[in-house]
Amino acid sequence: KDDDGILYCRPIFSTIVSLFAEQNTLEFAIPGGLIGVGTDIDPVLCRADRLVGQVLGAVDSLPPVFVEIEFSYYLLRRLLGLKTEGDRKAARVAKFIVGEILLVNIGSQSVGGRLLAFRADLAKIGLTQPVCTDIGERIALSRRVDKHWRLIGWGQIQQGRRACHR
Image (cartoon, rainbow, N blue to C red):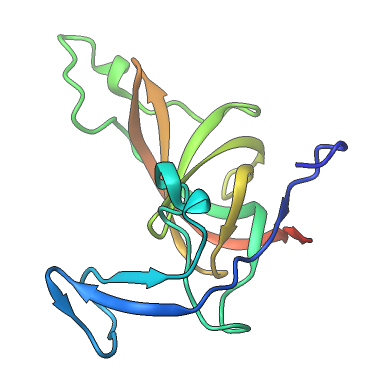
């Protein structure tokens, strides 16, 4: 963020120096499975799992980066995996509240966000960090319930506000 609170992002350019699958060195990678990618990125940028969930791709081949998304959504009727003794209403998923904090899973990335607006079929959320994703991507929505993140619904990205690049 800059002094005005505007969220910026900057791509990290690197060269792939190795590919691994478990203990095996790979000559090339195909979709599916887990692949370790060795790069020449400064380890300071990679420490503490800072790059977990980030997207890797050739220059000009990646989807846009968003700081705000608008999505169609479906809320579950009841919370999953929550034991309630007698009080069935306690397990119900409440409607959205403007300003509430949600956890949004987009692809392999989990990012927090503040709900900015919603109506019967669409909602808008401001993300705490930029996310590289496509329009039409499916998302999972979670809410904090008793100190745990609980799945409350899912959605599909309709549009978004792109991040500013530096």
